[in-house]
Image (cartoon, rainbow, N blue to C red):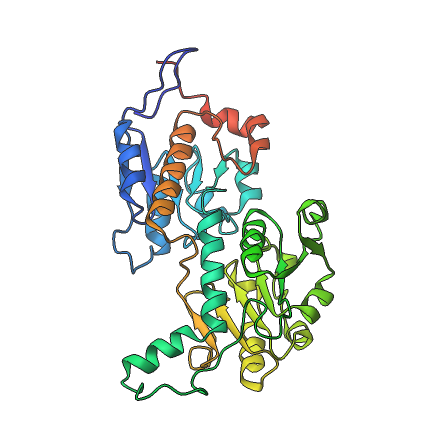
Amino acid sequence: MRGKRAGRGQPYSYPMAKIFVTRRIPDAGLRLLRSRGGQVVLGQSDDEAGLDRAALIRGVREADVLLSLITEQVDREVLEANAALLGVANQAVGFNNIDVETATELGIPVSNTPGVLTETTADLTWALLLAVARRIPESDAYLRAGRFKIWSPTMLLGADVGPGPDERRKVLGIVGFGRIGQAVARRAAGFDMRVLAHDPAHRDRVDAFPGVQWAELETLLELSDFVCLHPRMTPASRHLIDEARLRRMKPTAFLVNVARGELVDEAALVRALREGWIAGAALDVYEDEPRVAEGLAELPNTVLVPHIGSASGETRDRMAEIAATNALHHVIGQRAPQCVNPEVYETEAWRGRVARLEPS
């Protein structure tokens, strides 16, 4: 039996509603799903393994709602695997792993987990920026390898992030000025940086933000000492940072990407780092994740981490709870709080899917 829609003013019930969770999520989300009487089916419990395509489709066929991660491609084949599917709850801010246009056509609401990871991801941006500028991973490896024999004034020299002894304010360029880009800009005040931002869809955000100056992308790249990427991933933004734009950057500049790997042409980035077009790069995401472009991991002027932008315990717990809450709304045919295609609720296709949910 599936979840039932309650009458006006009555509590909702979820007797035996089946929610297919593709891979293990934090217990906070699983507890919430189970506390409402839902039946949770876990596709994969190994944190270091993915879910194969056949298992994904098989799980969707037998579920009322799909709770997915960004590691699963939820395309037309998956969405059409179950004519009774009531929704897709994605545990991520991004949802480019889901064919939202097809979902809307089929009457399937899609939800995400926005907002909650803003500060955590901005913190990682700054952690990476500081780490690559001051060569922290290299220094750590140097000491652990037993190479630290005596202090030297020429050992592991990095770059200043604050004004430094010449008192020149460093320039931080932020590409994409949504929640995370703005949170990164707020933190720049503590380093007395000049902040440039580029977001062609939201220039008003830049103009209204104290201490931040609008710049065209090429100008931003030419002037910035540090370039941080935070735009949405769209077909038009793929390889936004390509060879030509890497060559526009200063040879002393650093690139930081915690948004989406496809924003950067990684093959061109490897060349840029090898040949000194830029000073260094710090990456949390990769073009063909989890594969890293050939040669990138061997470069000493990089800091590379495995997609940990939102990886604090508190943030991941909250993301799981939000995804679970959205899933429970999908189960009963109620508007999900974080629906990314709200127009679906006006379609006959959606009304047809929820018609079988009777009042309790």
